[in-house]
Amino acid sequence: MTGLTPSARRPIRRLAPETVERIAAGEVVERPASVVKELVENAVDAGAMAITVRIEGGGIDRIEVADDGAGIPPEELELAVERHATSKLDPEGPVEEIATLGFRGEALAAIASVARLRLLSRPADREVGEGLSRVGGASAGRFAAPRAPGTTVEVEDLFFNTPARRKFLKSAAAEQVDVAQTLERMYLARPNLTLRLEAEGRELATYPATPELRDAATRVLGPEFLHGSFSIEGAVPGGRLYGALGRPSVAAASSRGLYLAVNGRPIVSRPLQQAVRAAFGDYLPRTRFPVGVLHLELGPDRFDVNVHPTKREVRFARERELAEAVRVRVREGLIGTPQVAEVAGAALSAGAFRPGRQATAGRELPFRPRAAPSSAEAPAHQRTLEGATPSGPATEVSAQPGHPRLRLLGCLEALYWAAESDDGLVLIDQHAASERVLFDLLLRDRPLSRQTLVEPVTVRLTGAQRAALKAHGPAVAQSGFDVEPFGPETYRVRSVPSFRGRRARPEAVTELLDELAGGGRPTTPDGLSERRAATPACHAAIRAGDVVSAEEFSRVLASLYALPEAAYACPHGRPILLAIPRSRLDRWFLRSGP
Ligand code: ADP
Ligand code: MG
Image (cartoon, rainbow, N blue to C red; front, side, top):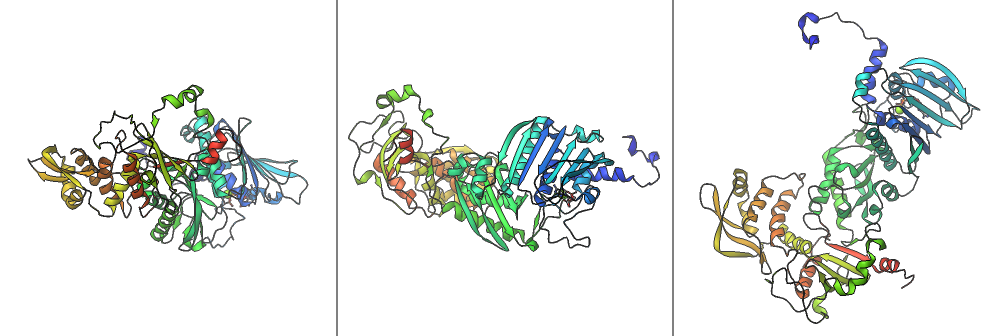
């Protein structure tokens, strides 16, 4: 705090160049992952096809990046580690049209000023490699060593001369994770590269070059992504968009699984991130985020990378227009894919069925055909239904474009229906299916049927809930809830939404009002109407445990099939249908052919 006392004023003096260097280095080199990012970018700019990264102590102790790129001629080695010296821009500019990942000419200088650096390089037309060493920015000699064409940069003892910075580093394990993620971001922006990561002398990960973006994404996001994803391709203002995104069933708990790239440069962009999330809208619960890779190819006048020294943040010209186009393209891709999610290979392997269970399956699984319509009010525990096996058209749902023909076989635990399609077995969540149908009715402003309560129920509303009721009165009424003022803070619920004899709890109106009052969902054009619809739909829907006849449920499915958009998730984002293709069954049961 002494520095703040007025008497401590000292004369203005010029900082030593090394001090300037170290201050500036902080902008580019924050942690081992930022060193790796800069060195890998240099390798990519040099035309490398294979890049190997070796780290020790999370990269704090040592980082080595070796490439098979064009190399640096020996007479330029000194310039390479000099600040503001680059081979990627004309000395006089322009700086607007940049095709390389680097262009500021400061990364090597910055890294050299806060670590011990060795640079060894051999252009293809030379016999040996030549190199130089730097310690904290100061020259520490040159050397020659044999090497295949390409460049190796070694960085040791990061921040050895700036202990304050070193204190801000995380544990070696955490830094290592950041390094791996840095490579994954680069790989997904340039899947034509082969990237290798070794830690403490052992291979940690390999990302092999592939022409298929979806294969690269699968390598990073996991095997479920391969079957659980859909492709996107289309025009956006000033360029085009393509990529692969996970269906709602493979979404993640954070927004970090969505990788964006512009012209082969990994980027972060909140507006674009939000546009993708908005496209998923009602298909994902608020706590889930889309995963996948999106590539933009844009003209150089459409974006500016010279916004931040790390160049990860970019600015787009006409950003809202671009974000809206991205949202529309992603939405098209999402609703254009078949609604039935296929069971992922890893999720259900033969080993998932334990032998003991299999042996008794025939007798003990509560998996029985459903018969005649039961009373809608049948108690939930009354699950064993006797009677003839259902057959005939009543339990069939005919095919619609994008939807398989289904014949209902039976229901498990008054929740999951099993159905036969032309291609195998389909499982359906009865609550999610009926919730989706009601949600859509409400979205399209069709009022739900309501049931008047014999005895109105009094509920107490908070200030925010009362304000929401005032602001959205008509929407609340349309949902089937009839609410009228009773006391200063209490209200009476006179009617509730109902569906096929089932009705919502009167108290659920408070949840609807909470939804209307706020919610963390990113703003979407349809955001409010979705919120208005989700709660009543959920509460009026057939629930888990409700006993439903096959005839009745086939009518729910027919309504689901009639929806204007293929719907494979309930309004909270849980999947509705799951398909297990015949071919997969055959594999499980070790049958080779049909
Ligand atoms: P920038 O990448 O912005 O030009 P750097 O400080 O990262 O600045 O690198 C300085 C120069 O060193 C680059 O312009 C390039 O000519 C050369 N260079 C750095 N790394 C490599 C590499 N791996 N292969 C070939 N040349 C490299
Ligand atoms: Mg660079």
